[in-house]
Image 1 (cartoon, helix red, strand yellow):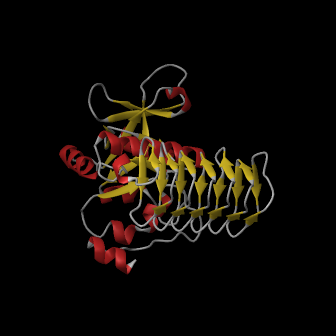
Image 2 (tube, one colour):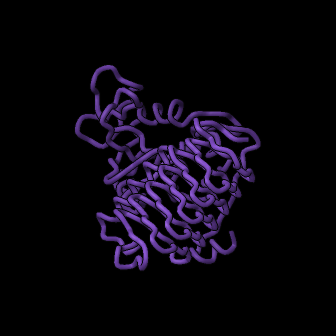
Image 3 (cartoon, rainbow, N blue to C red):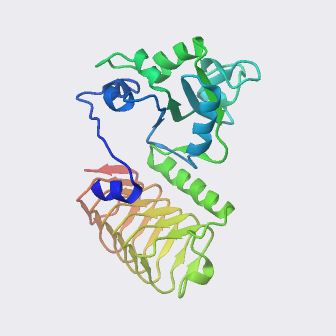
Length: 303
């Protein structure tokens, strides 16, 4: 943490729940930190991905001067979500409607907020409380909550299949912005890049590989010769050996995939998992520090 503090010029504090306190209770627990002055603070759900427009959010929040701002995102089927309903054509939130049967709007809570410290008065100490169900409706009733629609992509990445979808959205966003982070075909000597691919500069890729589309290769990863990768994420320090095939999967930190092995169908290898040569893993969720030496033909958890 000291390294991160020095790199970004920030001070990091940890507030640890003695027991689960819901989505609002932890704010009360961190009252001494969040309420030390009158400056607003940002709250994020840790399982969402987007472009995180913090400057825009902060400017908008200060412009209306109320207690809180929620970022919202548009969905195709609002009936599956809790919908944010604004007051007329204003940004002020009038109410929330949970899984509406009739159309009332298509904006839902994106899990990105900014609050004035005054919100802490609504959250008692040591109480388990839901910010979505117990705090936000009262703020809306008091006219203290506004909504800012989020531009660009957004995804909940709390599950492996959603993490892979979110990765695809992120890579597409990089491509739309012509980001130099993406690996171009001309930067791939001896192997082929297809579509959007992000390769860390410290990773190595062998000859005759085909990488992409929608692949992320992390720091220190070693991809050996003849490997095929598609719609997958390889975490730091992992190894994919000769002629292996990895698709729609996540290879965890310091894990390895054997020669001529196939990993597919939202397989997740935890940290330090080693799959033997010539193995088929079809939708396996393998917990850390395990070895896989037999085929996994149907999706299952390996403990």
